[in-house]
Length: 170
Image (cartoon, rainbow, N blue to C red):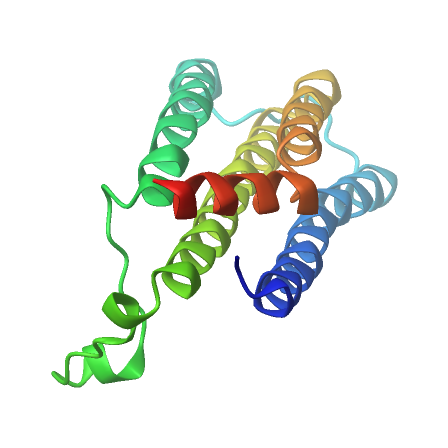
């Protein structure tokens, strides 16, 4: 059996973190709309916009595909991300070997933060394209893709609990 309070606390932090990251694309929408209200573009379009937009669309698509893979690799432990202060200062913290449950919960949290940051980057790409090419439709498509991915992968306690139980039963 596992310690439910540790999982609940980390999940609560994950929900707060995910919600905070999800606010960013909405801020981009407000800024873009204020930008349109206050500035007349005329025919001003960044000269390399047409070529750059294909590159940025490809970058966003790669982000979606790679992040799905990387998230699972982080959770499985195949990609190790060490963030403790002791490890940065050359002192190896052996806590994860003593408490595999806590280490797995940390991997769930790290995977969430990294994946949400990458999916937020999709909204950022849309905002950049909007600033360069003043295309609202494309901008809202990127915002929609970003928010959709975040909503689909929003941390659900039951999912985290099930993953932890599966991990502990191995």
